[in-house]
Amino acid sequence: MDIAGAGTTVAAAAGAGWKAPASMVLVQLFVTGMNILSKVSIGDGMFIFALLVYRSIVGAAFILPFALIFERGKWKDMDWRALRWIFLNAFIGYAVPMSLYYYGLEDTTPSYAIIFLNIIPLFTFTLSLLFRLETLKFRSVDGVLKIVGVLFSVGDTMLISLYKGKKLHLWNPILKLKNEQQTVYNQSSSRDIFVAW
Image (spheres, one colour):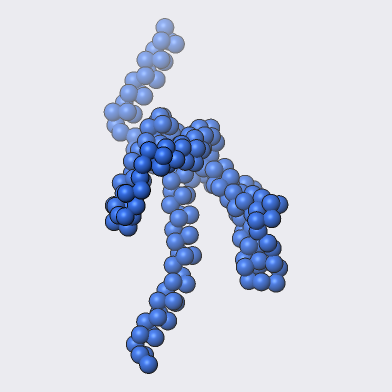
């Protein structure tokens, strides 16, 4: 019996136990940061489709090396039918929803965006129960975790929507350059002169 091998297997199993929750927390942090940065850039006048293009290019640049390495054998299966299917899925599953999301974010706050993102698991869970794709077993660990997840989702939504705290001012006042401030000052002083005339 190989004790070192058994110890390595136990250590790998213990390491795998925390990787999935840590990845989920990391994804939520990235999504929150993306919402805030998207709101700042849209609020400063960035064209929404340009933001979508930049986001797609950066995402493709990060994912393409992994696809080229781990999916080497799949390139032979790519034909026009597969490309049409990928284009349709990308258009309906990414471009249209993200465009609508950014147009909604333009007129609201990142808090509302987070609220609706937190409601998605609740609707998914409810629809899966209605269409009998999901079974709810109250006495199993899976059933309890599903219910706790839905309660956390609803609780987060209620907390974000009902909490009235201080506003978070990002870097807009910090990034004002002297030239921009001088231009604003000149415009306001010329307006004052015109009114005084």
